[in-house]
Length: 113
Image (cartoon, rainbow, N blue to C red; front, side, top):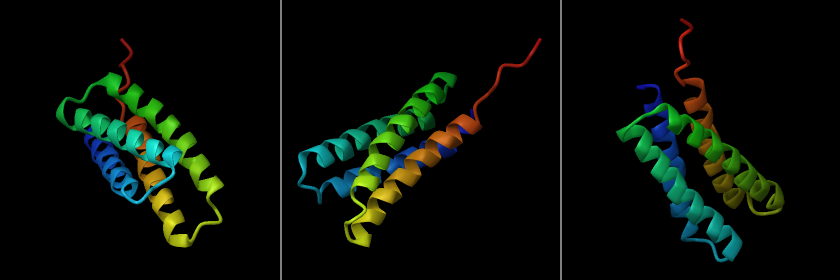
């Protein structure tokens, strides 16, 4: 289960970054996405660090898919923003997707008997 530590740290970075960016948002939909994403990412990240389990890989993968849809759509819809604002969304998107990939890649597969 030590492979989940990297994914947990990446989820924490994604969640803290998302929560920090939320302070600068005024659009209610963007604000809900960033705050909701921050809470879920921090919860999954802490769970992966404190008590890793195979079921957390499933939760991490589901959150990663939702993360890719939510923040990916926000990135595509905001391509006309200044580069600094666009890069902040890409930063959060990249860490969330990297966390989901890291947890899936380091999952423990059941051994064949």
